[in-house]
Length: 579
Image (cartoon, rainbow, N blue to C red; front, side, top):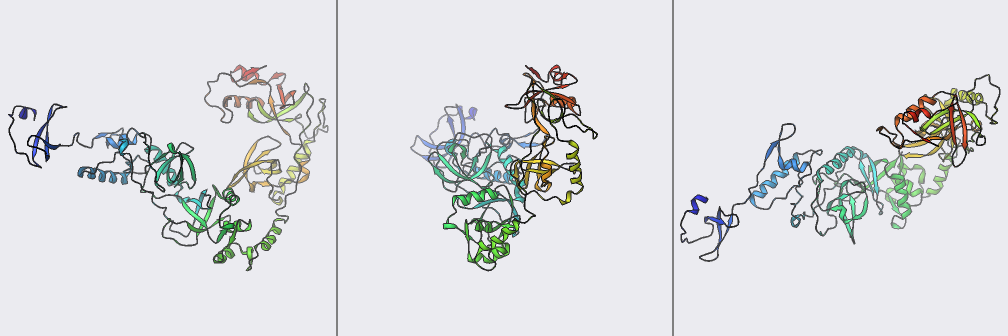
């Protein structure tokens, strides 16, 4: 074009709209094709040139030799954002193609979200759309995991069948959403879809509820709870808008909260009772969609949540729900509207011998000598190389008839306890279940060898399923066990002192420099090699303990045949001397 039009002489032309022409672009000093759009005067016209640069798709081979769209590849790697194409005819065609590509992407891949705007900040204003409403399971009774309870008493849960999809969706969002342009002031709308940066630094799909000064109140549409967060943690775009919300909203059927509004203590009860638990859901009022809250009966371990809230005086029964109440709580009213009397009868069953736990004193511990004295000891359990549980006293045989030695320490005869435990295990099926899980409660715990040993309750580790953290008092080790592996302990077994005493081994400490990568997770200052070395030293050996102090913790030196047991660790560089 330059060669042709640069050499032509200027001619007088009567310009008309839509005429094709050639124009000289002074800033680039080049000729381009154009079209007259408006005749301003006989010497000036308004024209448009062909779109430049031309929008194209470029393909190249990826790491495995497959041809991929370079734009999609950059988006997948988090190096670019999808661009919303203009409304020109060619732009619509490209946008349609983007939507088709998006529908073909799996959750595990980065997709081109058509609601994304161009990186141009002025254009980064997506349409005010919402995520699709949740889809009801095609069954009337199903299982959900309760993920949230709102202040209005609405209970949110994710169907167990969708848990895997939630995990995949969360992972896909993190992959797709790595780089963001700076967001200029934006006017949020109520119920507008967005993505939210949670307290775990991950992005989740959300919905705007209201603006509170510089903060935004949002609802996590796939997690089911509400939170007020800084505005900088909210971005007004939709992620995977074709995927419906995964969390279902539920309302307890057949009950009305006291005062027609759920009180704070009632909400606290619901959260403590239901959160992170799997519950059975029965839809009581069929619905075509989940735009409105579902009226359901929630049941845990066969117990209706509605009945539970009625019994604890947080709600009252609706007359229309009397059939449901009779079905799942037959003893609640017995045909009459007097639930308190019926529940009194149920409490009598809880006081039966099957549920009764004898209140027992805590275990005693052996008396230790004054600091500076020595006594025989055996290591029963190690937490770290210098934090161990020891058993006080020499290794005895069955013919020993002495319960003292020259150190002045008194010991209970070991044979009596061992014989009592042996007899108990022969009739273990007669033991009663443990029903009192208070801290330090003496009990019997089933070990992996199938035998029952003395233990004590440390804490409730998990509510659903119920898991109790216990410690074997004669060995020092701990275990997290279901309540079915705990039994009440006969009172005569509590009279024997616990044999495992926690002590700190004096004379050495963790090394200042350690190249060992394999470390103890719960005590990273120690290496696994140091722990295994100490286990090899003390395992099954009769040791001598020198008591250094009793307070603030019991501290001892341990010797084997006159040598400090920690010296091999120091020689190997696994520990430093601490004198």
